[in-house]
Amino acid sequence: MQDQSFFRPVDYVVFGVMLIISLAIGIYYSWKDRSTKDKTRNYLIAGSNMNSWAAGMSLSFTVISPTTILAIPAEIYIFGSMFIWLVVAAWIVGLFTISLYIPLFFRLNITSIYEYLQLRYSYPVRILGTIAFIVQTTMYIGVMVYTPALAFTQVSGFNLWAAIFTTGIVCTAYTTVGGLKAVIWTDVFQGVVIMIIQVIVLFMSASYVGGWKIVWEANSKTDRFNFFDSDFDPRTRHTVWSLLIGLTILWLSIYATSQSQAQRFLACKSARSAKKAMIFSDVVISFVVLLSVMIGWVTYAAFHNCDPILTKQVTAPDQLLPFMVTRVFQLYPGLSGAFLAAVYAGSLSTLSSGINAMACVTTEDLIRPFVRWSDSTMIVVAKALACFYGFCGIGFACMCSILGNILQTSLTLLGILGGPTLGMYTMGAVFPLANSWGASIGFISGVSFSSWIYAGSRHYPPQLKYWKPKYRSTSECVSENEVESTFISMINTTMKMTNTSPFLSETVPNTATASIQPYDAPRPALANLYDVSYLYYAPIGLAVTLVVGLVVSALTYGYKNSKKVDSKLFFPIFEHRLMRFILPMKVRNVLCCGMQLEGITEMTSQHDSFVVKDETDDDLIVNS
Image (cartoon, rainbow, N blue to C red; front, side):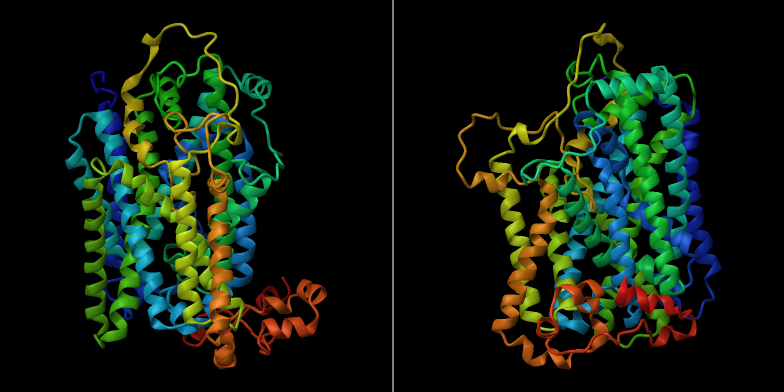
């Protein structure tokens, strides 16, 4: 590695200002809300009084991480533009969330999303969902501490462990003292930083390569404007079908069954406000994804005749964007610090959301059912838990440099758990037959089956013909001495371990280092199952959970108690006009175990004092 002098004093200032503002927001809301009556509710779900646009911005940047910012351009560079279908999937997820899940959660007046599992099934099922969320989130926030700390260290020469503790403590501090309000408003600030830097990178980089005409020609000649691969083979890595089906189910599991996202919905003033937040979130995500795709096109245009991966100037695709940024920003002091601040902002928003969500579910699911403590005591407990989980993340971050191979597997479990978790909720909300035995065994079966496929894919890596990488060239390379290796090293070690994220598990595998088998490698017939696209992991987990869960529920006489379950816990999906057209009444009655669900309305109990009743929302539940 060359002398690490990439950061100039002004870059330190820009980077430091981002951290200081984030901490100041937490301190401000801690002081502002010091006299609030219901402090616990205010701390955990912002008093259910947040603006829809702020909640929507926070929803967006809870799922947008540095791996998203860096990996989508790398995906476009290596494989072309199929990933743009993420935008369509996001809007489909928004439709389902608005129509089904938001009304369901507001009817129940819950703080922890896992309360639903107890209301519908039993307390042990609630604990199963809570523990699964805590384990996966703890591992992920550790990576979110380590990723930017390593980046900061390798561009500045700052001590790695000092960087981990400094940055981890800053994020833990503003999350602990400010609660969900501080987290949401910090997400808003950090989201604005990310989008501004993305726009600057896009247009300055396009100018750097010679304009949009060069960008168009370079990408069109190598078929990178490929939007419609409709191959039905499930082993093909990215197709229209795998992206729409796989990403829709994976993202739906995040938006509908993750505490980190559900808290933002419940922090809104009403169900109508939460729906507006979801729509605003889709707008922001679409904007960020489209910017990332366009940055990917520009990145390819910058290196279309001298590929840095083939020439060993970078060792992983995720380094391509930082490598280009060093060239574009080298004459503009402060912009490199701003770019790193944007990458860092993506980490902090995800980290703070995870810490606050784990404090919430631990308080509501594991402590409150067994104690009768006062509100003042519970707020102290919640803050102590936020601090505890923050330091757990810091501790796991310290292990990252040792447990690199294990980290990739643990992060992949984020995607593997998504489908089965969605299956538990969906089975309970759609089928009155489902019971706690079916939910538990179905969830375990779904996780086990998806994990088995993933383990098989590691033993028998996918064949290159299913990945379809695009053409790259070194025809006009001049000299390897032109490499600016200092800044790209900031992503090197990190991205080898963190090429997954909680909402895009293994979205952009490390192509430069991935083990991909040649066509003629000997493979057993079962390896065809292991070749299935990673995008189908969540749908497979969902399907296994539903099938096994319903069978077990039927065998354990779940139908006997189905009519005793509160109708507010269900979606009236079989009363939808399409279902009425497709399924005869007798079939729908059997599926609903004779329950009449068409009368479900969007109602709340304790929320009535501040919920604005929206008559059109009832139509969304039944008719949308």
